Image 1 (cartoon, helix red, strand yellow):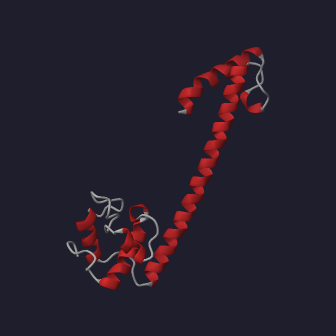
Image 2: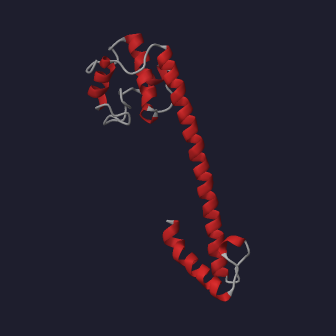
Image 3: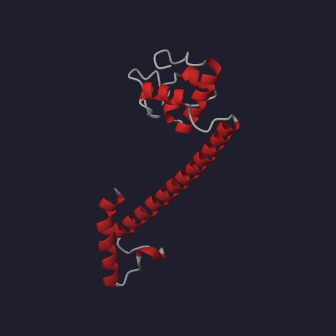
Length: 156
């Protein structure tokens, strides 16, 4: 959006500045033309917003990677490195193996079509469909260890 709204005016402003000897965009000096100065300030503001958003995404990515490492360690400690064939079959039947799946009424969510109460009973937080796939596998494993195939009456 920024590029469409401001790229051409900024290029025109830089070209005009070069011709009339005005300061360049990057030197921080205000432009004599209020319109060009307004565009420069808008550019600086939007760049700062993009930089902050980028930093937030980098931090969130680090947190997700750390959580995935923690879950993999917990799964391997529990003797699980991947979902069992039975859990894979349940997931295929329930959601086609799609970790983002949501039932038609919205009650059942994620790869194993957890309802919220069951998801929370095995330590899940938030929405199962928003959880990483490896966490859904881990929570399904825990549930299967506790109750067998009973929570999945059709696919179990």
